[in-house]
Image 1: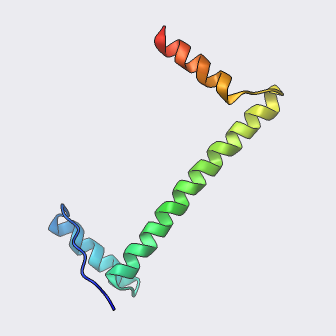
Image 2: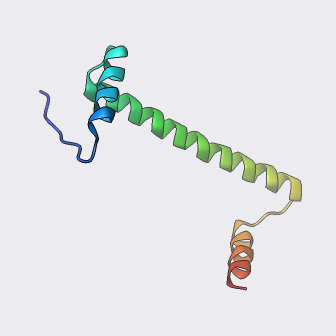
Length: 80
């Protein structure tokens, strides 16, 4: 059973584009919204994974790396 959901603040042109893209993918608007949300979440997760990998590379280079120490340095610079 499907339900009706309202999204406030979407201009007519954006709504038409969304409906067109859903149709191009052969999906209902609800399914297409779900696909877009999953893609967005996967992209966010990938960004976090890249950040974690960069931190791991920094740790490997310096031998000992402390996230807490880095935060303290940042706070000190910010307050100075």
